[in-house]
Length: 372
Image (cartoon, rainbow, N blue to C red; front, top):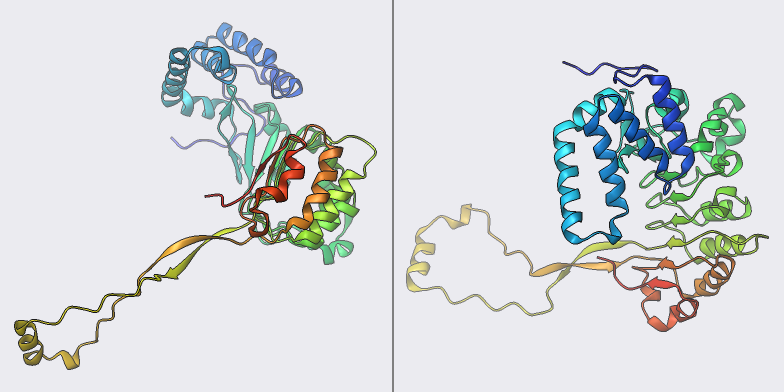
């Protein structure tokens, strides 16, 4: 039977109003407070859903299992997998409404906490349905259509009502924003000017083809979410020293200490074909039989076979940052005392350990060299 599309209706045995109260409490508790989720598990067991309750408890235990024995961890993982294989389809059909253009992601601590959409407007349009169904705190944007974002040059010509979704209160609940691989070059100004995202903790802008102008716009525009994020991912973009220095120094000159803990700035690493440097050995002299067969055949009418050149694919770094960015990153580290990880992989000018030593002297783990 085809799965039906639901708007504001919960096909589970649990009353929708009761479930929505639990989802709100779980979301408000945050990522590392599992008390409301465990209370919800007890409630589900009382409502006749012991397997679902056990799954929540086991995934919470797995997330906390640093003190358990290896045998217990294996048992928990095995039981979780068995429960998923047996019940996940039914659980998702009962609990997660079908919404066109939206995918419910995997379970975290017993519940779905992130969604993937093709348009951010979907989150606003179906806000009640989404947040009543699950304690969503993360949004991933994938494969957006070409008209999903407004160009910076057209922003002043866009009617205000077409931008109202960016300021919708629904974004006050989201902590994780993942725009990996989306084309955002020249299209970030609308977010810088209007998106406040007061609870943003993770911002993934990896592979968005951001250039210096985009980072400078975020810097001098004082985009508020950047002063609150714990994890900022700018991997595999096309900005250079100028853009990164502007962003880092702008953040470092703020009046408050930054909560930033992880910063990712890895460059491109591409596979490039290189011919072999070893000269090819001359082909062996043909035998008498081969010479006779060649003379008697009609090889003149056949295409001549050419041997492919010898060689192999090599990974080459395509990063654009140089060691000139290090002083700006040191200033940023001084403004973010919790910063412990910086990834500078695949930038050719940053492969020498002494270049990043000023960062390491501050207790920061710095990744350099080729990242495979």
